Image 1 (cartoon, rainbow, N blue to C red):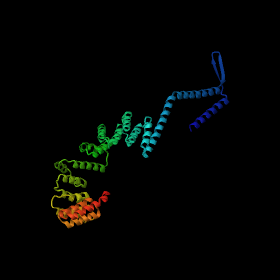
Image 2: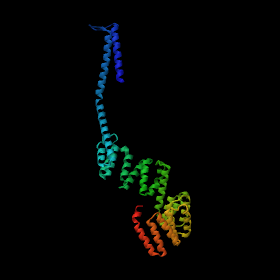
Image 3: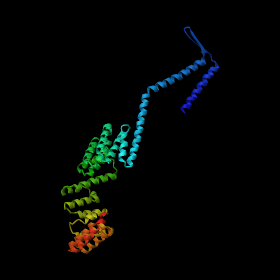
Length: 393
């Protein structure tokens, strides 16, 4: 379109000049001392226009020559970028094919040429790590830090993730430093929290919980899971029953009756041989929500009259007749109450629904308590025969 307009203007000007020449509007006399030149006005106008055109093209030529080094540099740079992009694409394809060596080779080959070289170095570091080439991995990470100091967050996160499984302490140090420099960065907080939770660093988790809750950008469900996970770790790491009881009494009643939380509390209390009121808590929780983990631990409590707990558990059977866990608990409670016939009945029913080694052991233990050692030995023999089956589950 631009070329068409240019030619159109050229023809219009040419026609105008030709018309002026035909009309013969007059003559022009030019004198310089003893020299005199007489010519037509049309020729003067034509020469003027030709001079303007020549001047324009001379200026264009000069500007082109002046900018030639810059244009050449830009073309070379563009070619490098295209090579880097092609190398990056080949590296990513090789990565998808699990060809780590080829992917690393392609990614690092043009890292210095790319306008996004940090991604080349980081991806190459991942490929080297996949080959367990830790020296090359560390070299690529160091090069990325030196060439792209402003990308400290991205580089630090990638390095921490690569080191998390083999060198967790180093990864924690890296994430702690990133969190210090960028205290409100959501991804830094998420990665740091996840690694702290994996290695059960409850003290640091409690310290960073306010920041994590406010700035990590989690959904309500994710926040609830994180808070519950922190509480479970606190329960698991209680060193004394007094510490456990202090933590427990600080919780809201609604939190205490959450099945996952109450299960951990019951397990830890049994570890400390403190069983008071555990049965009552489980009964309250099961009224709100059925949970087989709580039902299981209900059968492990030995504090108080077992017959009372047996009668309460029988009441749950109407709504859960096919629960192997409930039948196991009923068998244990019947055995504690010396109701041998009912204990055998419930434990055998549980085995019919779900043959587990623990259920066989409970049945054999019940026969031993009854004085039937021969029958107990037969049950143990049946349990040994079920070992391959149980291993599948």
